[in-house]
Structures are given as structure tokens and as C-alpha cells.
Image 1 (cartoon, rainbow, N blue to C red):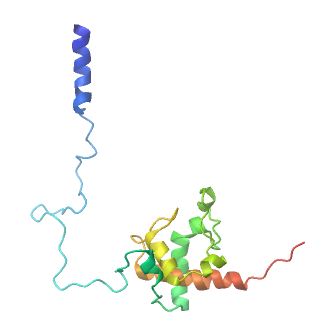
Image 2 (tube, one colour):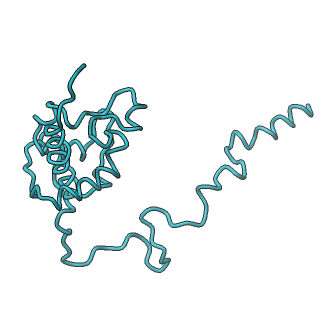
Image 3 (cartoon, helix red, strand yellow):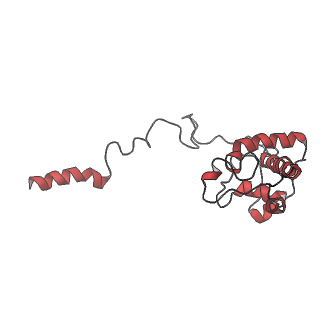
Length: 177
């Protein structure tokens, strides 16, 4: 009888999910998502009246089919290509490699290899398709819609087109032995 009572007492907190340390991480002193730090005015800060999004930060593309039909609104100039190159180093080179051939350090560890951005298959795609792939992600590629603004993604497209694809086409072919 004593064993049964002891067993019930030991298992009671487990069955009630009432261990004293089971919710310490949930009930800590911190600001929760969309919670105001001002206790007198709880909730998210409202947008100012008559506010509009900053140009280049909002995109209203709902799927890849719509993205593929888009045209690149950012001119392919040296400034855009340079900015796209910096963004490529930060977000893309780990998988696609510095040359864009899918030979990055992280990409080498993946079962499915990242796309070769200099390949004819990628060259044949529209700018909107490449932009949409960055926006929505793919088989192994995550979506970068939350990390990069629409304009930054267009700068990346410009870098892929001019910085990677044109420079790989202009590179001399090594003679075979």
C-alpha cells in the first residue's frame, strides 16, 4: 500500500504536467512578439495616419507564375551590380559559391546541389523567375522575402546576370591536355 501511494505521489505531477520547472522559459520577463513594452498602451504600435510603404519595400506578387512575368524595374548599372555582389556574398555564396556554380561550402554538404547560376538553364530563365525563386524559395532554397527587400532581390538578379553570367561567358576556356 505504501508503494502504491508513493508511486501515485511521484507520478501525479507528471500526469498533471505540473513540474515546477516545466514552464520557466515561457513565463520569463521579456517582451513577447507584438507586445508593447509600455504597460499603459499594450499591443502593437499603430501606423501613422496616411502612411504609405517606402518605395521598393512592398511587393504584391502572389505566386511564381506572377513573379515570372515581372520585368526588372532596376537598371543594370555598375552601382546595382556592386550592391548585388555584396548581397550575394552575404546571402548566396555559402551555397552557390563565389562563382555561382553551386559549389559553396554549405552547398557541398547538401544532398541536392544548389543551382549553377551560370548554367544555360538559368540564363534561359526570366529575371522575374530568378526574383521569384528568391522570394518564394524552392526545393532546398529558403525564401528570402523576409531578409531582402524586393529592390535588393532585383539588385541580386542584376548581379547574377552581369556579374556572374557575363563574366563566366567571357572567361577563357582552359585547354585540355
